[in-house]
Image 1 (cartoon, one colour):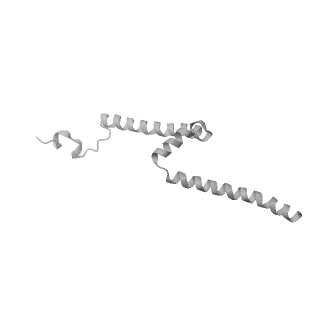
Image 2: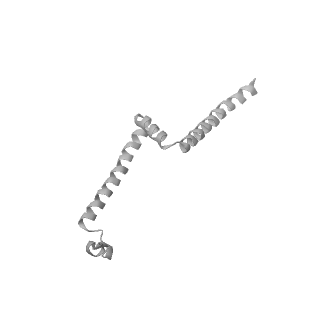
Length: 97
């Protein structure tokens, strides 16, 4: 009986570790194959979790940076900062008469 107890004492933790590895692997494969709609659904479901709480501000920062860059680009075009001095910049010379 002593050998059986030792075998079970080693077998149970090994089975738990193997099961955990398989579960993480299956979740990774599921996330890799999901569509954009599934990603958005998972993101909405994760809003209450710690991971969702951590990703939400990060996503807001990325979106804010993209919006700021787009606004700055439009302002630059309005001010003529993006002009290169080439023929394509001069509206009078490039428009058909």
